[in-house]
Image (cartoon, rainbow, N blue to C red; front, side, top):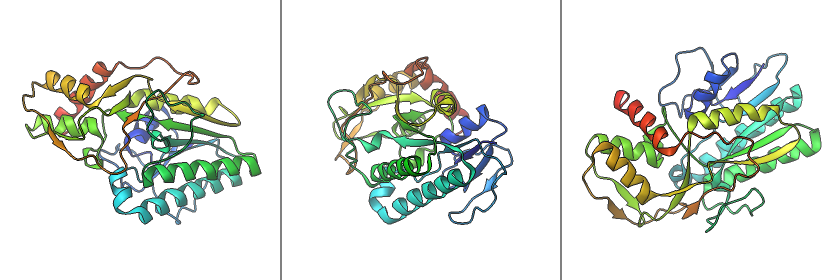
Length: 286
């Protein structure tokens, strides 16, 4: 049996659709529109049920907001590290593989594409928590022989993403649909690597076929600036207002896009098509 932690969350719910027989554990803390399917309600330190056999644990559960991590660092560090330790123990006891959802936030800003060998220099507490999670899992692989596949996600977007957690695409779309102002934190030249959630779910599922300890950047390799994203969405939605410029936020990275030469998946949904699908979702799920 496979387990998905955070299987009712944004990315996890799309993975669950690809793995309908997986056991999902979730506390619904980051579930915008949960799937109407049975799952195990989970609280840190309280999950005692384990199937007799576990093949792969997809560990996606985490506190994910950079803003929250800067405002409440103890909570985010404690929750993310403790949940990863629990998953590592499940894997050790059941000789299971771990596919771990890490983040581009483990890196510092860089003018060019980020490769898996670049130094890990997180600029936020959230990024720090993911870096430390990776270190925990590396030592569980080294000391106990557990297979661990680390997937460093770029900026994932698509249906069922909660705008309240701060991601730029659902925030822009929902505010534009309501005719509200759009804020740039900085001058809009920040660049990101946007990847559609269905692609990320497929990559995460396919990673379960790998062995050993491996790390992959999961993005499209194509940078898009916030200005470019704004213009594209404004054109698609007929939005007429100019963005309001605010100060940059602490913990935000200036430029982040991936070198994906090592990635085993290349058939990406183009950005404009992914945005069309995402807009359609938020029009019916405001």
